[in-house]
Image 1 (cartoon, rainbow, N blue to C red):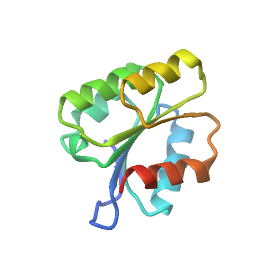
Image 2: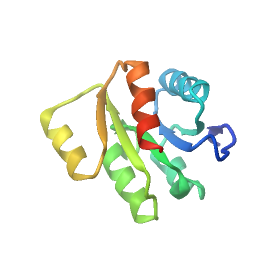
Image 3: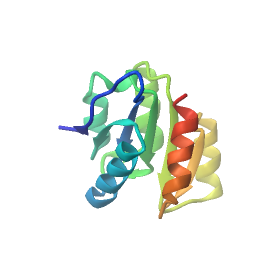
Image 4: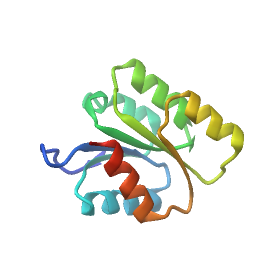
Length: 128
């Protein structure tokens, strides 16, 4: 079951997929406190099973997941109708990953640990 806060016209829905529970909770609280409605998930399967996911304004997704990777999950979500912008986060950045993310239509790639203010501003810019 995803953790979430209600979406309103003033609060765009952002999906958050991060398998590390502590990081997920921290990012969830950061995004909620910054005025977003957030649905957070621990696995790609859980996110893809959510019928509201395709209607979200944006996605913040980890690259390395226990059931795949952020690129493939995002590709599947887009095939299901997701039109929002996506931000990839990773503890293992590389030029190859950044190029693959750009090719997949990701707006940004951020290295962990995250600069919270920079992430919030990127999400805000993309969800408008």
